[in-house]
Length: 593
Image (cartoon, rainbow, N blue to C red; front, side):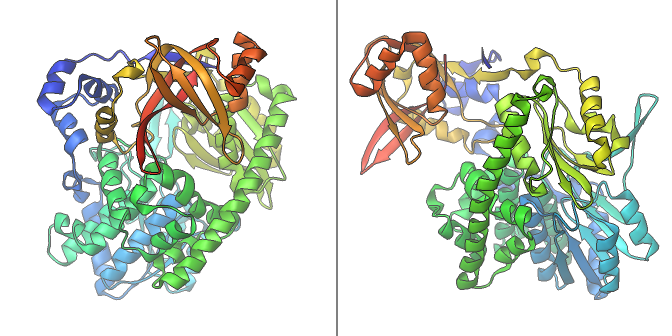
């Protein structure tokens, strides 16, 4: 069920339009993204990577750089320990390339999802110690490894944490006491006393900022100069890749990183990334956040889910296109396998929800003991989309039960888990995503406690669809679509604008695609003007809705001949359709009623 709402944020759209040379419609959309101040509007429209925040604004950055340079000069062995997802792999690569450039004695370890689990553990620390490692440098993990870092300290090792996750805390008398690990340095913008201007960056961006600062200090340069070097530009590509892959909000600094990174990726300096685009059939010139989020990124995540993410790291380290293509081919094959397993898991989860008491819960906890533990997060995300409820998917492993959760806007997953933290052997995460381990006997208790503590209302479960501008389709021109490009890149936190029009007549239609899952229609507005409209959603659901409202015969006429009996209100986005050299306007229908 979705609730349509028109954004009603106010501003002097005429003045903004005149000052920045944009249409009032574009001015309204920018205001809807909470971009208000003149300097922020200018940055949104014209910002470049030169406006990224200085690395030393991150707490402990200067201390980290000093320690690393001392270790490099002394020839000490540094081990980078990352994570097995997109952000972890990209973070590890960024640190490895940067430290190698500085002449460090460095190697990398990416924990195995099944054998090691997430983040630091005692075995990884002992292995590092036995290998003669002096310094452990974490990325995309470590902020929750309080006990593990204490163990490393007892062995006489140096630990530096770079992370972006929430800092664990204990609540006493309504006050939070944050538990920052006793590392030699901790670089994490989520620390209460960090003060970084935009803390919503991913682990790879933290790593990127560290390398800029490190090389700048080593060569007595400004970090901006390092950013514009060949190495700096290559590493920016991976910071952008991870920002999209880790679903960070494309606001402020993140938007500038992704905007610049996408342009650089079109002519990527990295052989492995080039090979991944080649084997997945991606046209680099048309690279978008969607391409990374739904085509390239899942190939990295699939290797981390079903095999060892270290193989994905090797792809980016590859020094020949031949080797890179072989590695990229393996990643693609693994992702193809993952898709089928995921679909089976989603079907099993939905069957449980629909045929048991689970469906009545406000917070879904679905136990799928036979599903591969690596797929829990992606299945939870799909179930959350279908049910519009916070969802945890748990699986059985050799070490008890593990799981992942994906949330809705009104439910802070990490905070809610903290209320029952005694049930877990390990947990961590963000507002919208989390991971956990717990004994099997606690599964039912976990479900019960989450729901007993839950204060969500029925309104929280409604999908809220925000309309930027109620706008007739006859306003749309090729020039207007071109102007919308100024708002890119689109993604989480900066969605494609949505427009709405009432009383759209559906005249004729046909079903396209290998899976018969795309609808192509000719529609007319109230003035009688015709438009092409395409729909990539649930075609069966659309047909059922039209049949219920206007009768099966009207739907049959729509696809067989012509009809004027079907009238819908639509939310749409205009785009340019290029086919065999012809350029035309096309409306993409997102919602209907």
